[in-house]
Image (cartoon, rainbow, N blue to C red):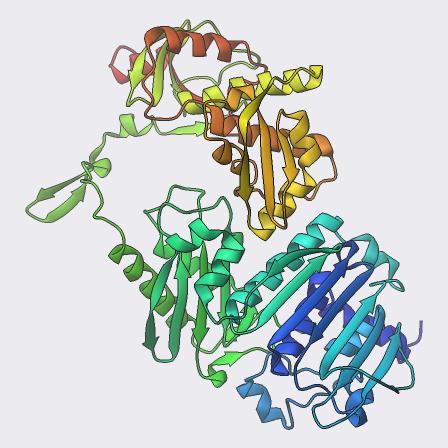
Length: 575
């Protein structure tokens, strides 16, 4: 085929694909335009997860009528004049692509009035086709209404996530900007319901409470203002008692711009190294300010990625500030008996362990049971052999004897598996026992948690919960599954939404299983709980009866197996 210039509409659609990835991308671009315009009140209206409608209105300075056609033109901006300006960006927007790119893949309506004009102006873009501007009565500020996103790019529309996922992304984005700009009022309405609203009081911790919940916000540790050239660091981090199962709650703003940067996340995680359990991550909302010439924001059209002139310095400063603040708020660690003092200094006793004993470091085999590497064959598939309870170690692990050696069982993980299979079997049979509370309990959630709960009310009902909406982000709990009756009702309900990962699969059975696993995690016996020998033996019997006894519902191994052969080698009875 001969080389030719692409038609304008095709080129625009290609360019739009770099800027507009999903509904949240549209919201981000319009929010940033509103903030650049000095808005102090921004309202966002969403329908069908942004597919049908995204509407963002603000009370900013507005666009003069003469400049309205330019506002939707590609590469038209008031924020740059010469190339050198690219290396000292002080605004959120600067590329002049947002409205043009959105209008290329949607039906866009722009209404705006500047402070110096009596009437506003209305302009429509329909799949890249620009209409004629018309005068219209409107208050000062700008309203952008985006309908039928990707109507003319069906392949892109097809690959959007579920509506619930897109709504969640938008909610997360708006709430993060509300934290960064506490002086502005942000109001997000999704599917006719106010999902999030900040007061605009300027109190950042107040916004944290609206986003993460009052209790979490109260515990968040404020970073002392640290200015180490060329970086100024402020923000909030979580104490060691507050953590999550993913990195999603690590939020960074650089010069007021929300960004995603692997190195910044790594710096914060490194600061918590050795203080949090493996697989757990802190919450953090951190703002870095530095001279604009130290940051290259023109890396990607979506402006979510940036490049630092001195990345090592930024990493070091951030890691040091977070670590110092954290240690200043944390009691001294317990004595480490792995270390001892010798003339040459501290030594790690784990380094002095004999090579033979080092072979006892275990690894998970394909069946999910940890076996001793190189010293014994993996256990055959299927159920467990009959086990005899011997005792308990550290009020957390059961010691049991089997026909093929010694078993160490994590009592919490084992009980999770037992409860999970019992609950799922009862659910399948339609016989989940529920206990009505004497007094209904009212529980308030964060916007994100309320969305998760709203989406899964029917699933929770099948698992034995009776929950009903009771206000904007408040729910009333009337009944619990019987297996949770020993737990504080509010904690039981919160357990199903805390740390919940985004579920990209439409399979209801998977969502149901994940919620059931979370319920069982809360109800199972905990590490530190002393069990009688009779209780230990009963737990072993119940575990033997499970279909998948070797892992908990979350995939963690329930046991470690030491074969007789491995023990004989360690005691020198076998070569």
